Structures are given as structure tokens and as C-alpha cells.
Length: 224
Ligand code: ADE
Image (cartoon, rainbow, N blue to C red):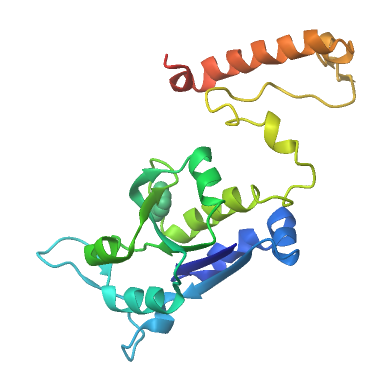
């Protein structure tokens, strides 16, 4: 798989993708990730990439020229172009799973008030938001989306079973609380059932606690 991130801040996008599991996936050749500066496609002598809004309004908008040039140069026959924007569809685990099957993604990162709408109409296959809040730029969102996709690639996590238990494998249930040693920490004890060795009881306990936690933190997942 290949992921190209188009941004005004390549360092912001790449920094979280250069350590730990994602860095190991890159080193093992499971994914090739590159971040490019959109300014490199500006034809302006000041390397400008933004301009004022047509029809008036506050702020600046990314202009179409450099973005069209960049995407036309980077895309191939199997490329999916995704715009990171708070106006996008909300990113979920199911979308991460779908995107992990793609061969080539271009993640275009908005900045200022966003991008000229002709970019969206002509070049973008999918607009994605990582949540209902506004970041200073899309590079942070692109790093989040890339991380969630790359960890799903076969071989990226050492233990393939790690995917099965986690929250959102069942999209309607959060994970149960988890404990490690010591069994007694400052008088705070690990629930007895977890050290009982009784697998059916442990399973039932986990299910009950998962429900309890979901009800408390994400009642929306239960339709409540
Ligand atoms: N750019 C700014 N805010 C964003 C968000 N919530 N998701 C994706 N891209 C963004």
C-alpha cells in the first residue's frame, strides 16, 4: 500500500508516523508513506498557495492550481483521493477497514478556510472528518487516519489477535476494563473473577463490564 499526504506541513503529518508500530510497518515494506509540501507545486514566485474568498468573507482559501498539479502528478489508475476536512463524513473503524484494502491513497490536507470547491468536485473521492471539532490544519487528521489504516495491514501488529478484542471490533460495544499485576496495588484489588481461571465466568464478566462502560461513556452506541 502507498499513502501520499499532501499538506503545507509535512513534518506535522510525518512525525507521529515515524515511530513505533507504524515506523516498523514502513520499515518492513507493508506501506510506503510520503508527505509532500503543496508549495512545491506553486507557480507563484512567493510560493503562495492561498487567496481571498470570492464573494467576500473572512480568511483565505487554498487555491486550485497547486493542488490540481500535485494530484495530477501523484495519482495513478488505482488512487483514491481523500480530503481531510471538518465538513467530511465522520471517520470510523469501518471506514479504516475499507481503506486498508486500497492500493494507493492521497490524503489532501486543508488549511485556512479550506480548499476551492472545484478541487472537491473534480478530484476528491471522499471527504473525511476525524470528529466534530476544528483543527488548525488537516495534517494532524491525516496522521490519525493513516495510523488507524496502517495498523490494520496484515503483519503490522505483532499479534493478529490484538484486533479481535478491541473496541469497535463490535462497533456497538466498548472494551471491558483491563488489569495487570500487582493483584493488590495500594489496597486496590484486581476483580477476583479475573484471577479465578474460570473462562466462562471471565467472559460473562467482560461482557457485563463492556456494556456498563458503553452505557456510561457512549450511550449513543446502544441507541440510548
Ligand atoms: N481539518 C480541520 N479540522 C478537521 C477535522 N476535524 N477532521 C479532518 N480534517 C480537519
